[in-house]
Length: 79
Image (cartoon, rainbow, N blue to C red):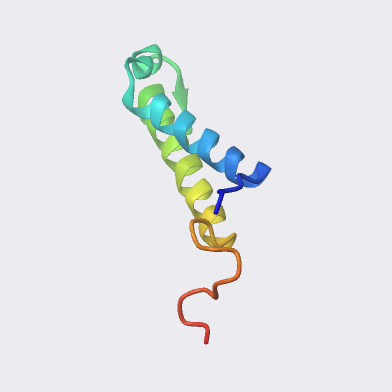
């Protein structure tokens, strides 16, 4: 059976990949500044917190959409 990628799944994959790239790649050095304070934190801390929050929200949306399971199968705990 061929897998289908819905626009929501593609958006989740792209968003999570972008979030990981912004956190784990050398691009984080673009935010390695202590000068501008955002919400009382150095910018690098804010940058990490922002992208961590984005990834967490994307995983939560994926969980709510029953991401990764077959379309007809019930969620865990449902009978």
